[in-house]
Image 1 (cartoon, rainbow, N blue to C red):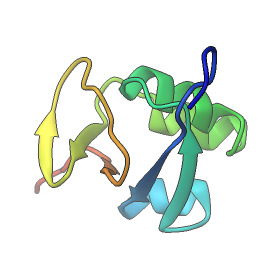
Image 2 (cartoon, helix red, strand yellow):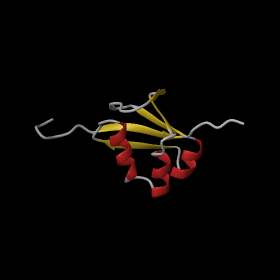
Image 3 (cartoon, rainbow, N blue to C red):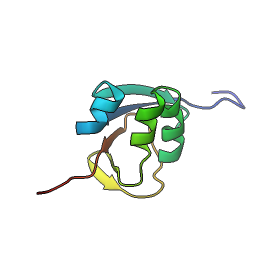
Image 4 (cartoon, rainbow, N blue to C red):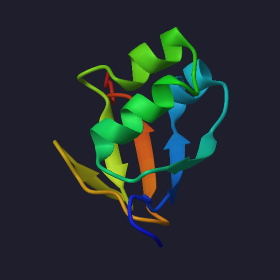
Length: 91
């Protein structure tokens, strides 16, 4: 890769329960410049409608990277799987 070129990474993004309904699908394959979860979320803004983006970026949404829950920043690598899950409610 030459100078000034940025490597693209492929991330599998999965959506569960109510978030799947908001996005209208259960997963997306996203090619992005890598970065962290905030970078991925900003990229998703261009791929989903406003209501879906609001749901994905809500403070109570749980995020898992490669099946482990994470909080805050997390560097993403090629082939990672990121899952967005709504909060679990009980009764």
